[in-house]
Structure formats: C-alpha cells, structure tokens
Image (cartoon, rainbow, N blue to C red; front, side, top):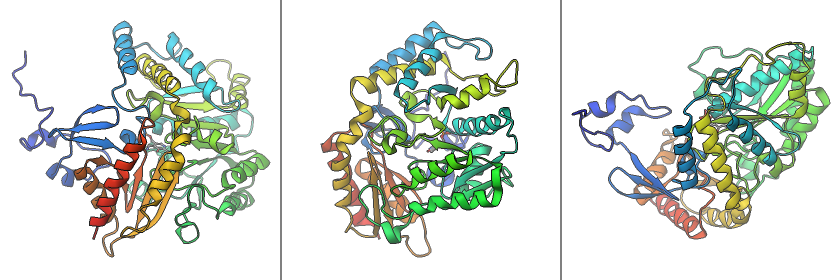
Length: 447
Ligand code: PMP
C-alpha cells in the first residue's frame, strides 16, 4: 500500500498539490489562487470539494445531456471494461462499434448513414475535413482543396479545426495554420436582431458570401464547415433561411457542406440533430460530447451515402481512407454510447428540448431589463446572455457573472462577456426557474 496522502479532494493544501497540472483553456494562475473543484455529480447537480451542491446549468461542458451519474451508463462501462478493455482498431474489429454505428444512423437524418469514430469533437472535425478533401481526390477532383469556415466559429483545437475556426485568440499563437482557408462573416448582429426570441429575422443574405468566394476561387472549394448554432463563441444563431441558402449554394457548386454538431447533436435543440431541426441535410456531420453523455471520450463523424460510396468505389484497392485512431470505436466508449442512447430513448430526451423550449425562452427573456444585458439569445435548450462590456475591461463582466452564479449555486459558462447556458435535458421547470433566479441575482450585483 502506498503511504502517499490522498490529495484528490484537497482544495487549499500545499501549492505543490496543484502545480503540476497545466489546465486547458483556463487562466491557470487565477484558478490556482482560487480553485473551484468539483468532486461529485448526480442528476442535475455537482458537489464541490467543500460540500456545496451546484445546479449544472451547462450540462458539464455541453455534453451531459441525460444528467450525471446515470446507472445504465455506469453499469455498461463497468461491464465492458471487465469483459474486454481494448481491441485493436485497424484491420481488426469487435462487435460494439458496428452495433453503435447502426443505432446512430437510425437517429440521423436523410442518408447520413455511415459513421467514423474518433475520440473528441476536435478529432471529429479534423476527420471530417480530411474526408472532404479525400472525397474530391478519389473522385478525380483533387483541385478542390480549399476549406471555408466562418468568423467566430469554433471547431476544436486541432490544426484543421483551428484553421477553419474563427476565434482570434484560438488562432493567433499558432503560426500560419492551413493554407487555402477562407472565412464567411459571422451572423451575430445585435443591432438588427437583439432580443429575438428564437431564430433571428435578419441576415440570411450573409450566406451569399459563399457565392462571392466561388466567384473568386472557381471550382477549388472542397467544403464549407459551420456550426448550425455556434456555441463556444457565445450562442450565435443562424438567421432564418441562412442554412438553407448555404445548402443551395453548395449544391450549385459541388461543395460539401459540413455541420459541426458537437454541441447541437443529441437533443440540444429539441431534435436529435440540428440538421433535423433546420431541415437542412449536410454531407458530413461531426459529433462528440452527448454521444456518450460525456462519460467516456468519443466522437463520431456521420457521412452521407454518396461520400462513403465514393471511397468504396474508389481506385484504392486496399485501404480506402488512410486515417484513424488507436481508440476509434473503443469498446468501453462504444458501450457507454449504446447505454446513453438507451437512456435518451427511454426518457424521450432527444425531443424533450422541444417541450421545454418555450418555457426556457420566456424565463430567459424575463432577464432583459436587468443591468448591462444587451441581448438574450435562445434556441431549444441553449441560452446566451450578452453583456455590455465594462469600458477597458472586456470580458470581466462575463467572468464575474459566472463567479457570482457559482457562489450562489449554479454553474454557467462564460466566454468573454457572454454567459451561455445549456442545462442537461432532464432539467425540470423548477430548476429552470432556479437557474434564472440565480442569474437574475448575479446580474443585479454586476457593476
Ligand atoms: N466543435 C464544436 C462545435 C465544439 O463546440 C467543440 C467543443 N466545445 C469542439 C468542436 C471540440 O470538441 P472537443 O473539445 O471534444 O475536442
């Protein structure tokens, strides 16, 4: 037995207990002076290291859609890890990812009926971009090499996703990134669309920028990638008709349309996928997060039949796509995913957001007259509160509202001066009231 002290739940102990871990996307120095540590989770709540119960207003990180600590998922993971912890993924298989892929395509729209497994949203995005480029190549159109993203887009942190992403801070430290990438304008227009309940009325014409890029680049564009609803940039909604217009332009010019559904997938908008909610079918769809209810890392890229068929009928006699991960289709992750789909189905969670969406919208919009609120955005069970930045201290109000809510017992995400909410899909109306009440108290205290 080790005589090492158990530091797992320590919050204020020796500095060395916290120093080795370089936290991702975190102000490390600020955090280590004031650590907020979570040590337990059940249902709609986290427990902090100092024993407080915190209402989870962000489904972990947009992923724990069925709420925390779900028994069927725990049992499936325990069973699978005991039965077979790992199986090689290349030229060798095991039954679970086959079964999981079949179950997934039964949920997906149209003919998005082939699935490539990854381990995260970032990997799903880079996989999707590589599939798009290779698709054109195997069809003899290797000149289609350009990728189009969008300003304020977030597509994970790998090199492809960083390149098509449009958040300046995520790009500026990392050199030249991929060549041949252009960005459409983002669709956030507070001037014209502030406090729209649901989809903005104005801005569908922004999709026509893609026509301009086609005029400039001819037939060299391989794919366009967008989040149907942009989450990480602070809940940016597509104007009515915008996604339909993008689809039309892609169709007219032989460009693949990729929806990054890492956040919107698995019920967030009240339909299994945003593609169904908007009735727009992408050629490729990236997912992760809710795929396993956040329990075990996993991502999945869905492709339409014509994309898959291009590879299966392609000239490569042997391996059709030189791409994959050691942990693609990992048995434990696949077991977690299958159990997750059971929970979603049994509790009707993939459409529950549709039942709650009006209530959610009404409650959130009741905050509109509170201090510094300059916009409120909502769709399905996503919400965003956009705050007037404090002069000379952009981002502080968002952070302070996040901290105030945490003190008062709710976890909400902040990005700059926008606070984003995405509760687990099991949330009750009373818990929505509680969350909005805490937000209101936090807003009243802002300076
Ligand atoms: N795409 C989108 C739209 C996302 O929101 C995220 C994560 N927030 C990612 C990709 C990256 O996922 P991961 O952090 O699992 O790599």
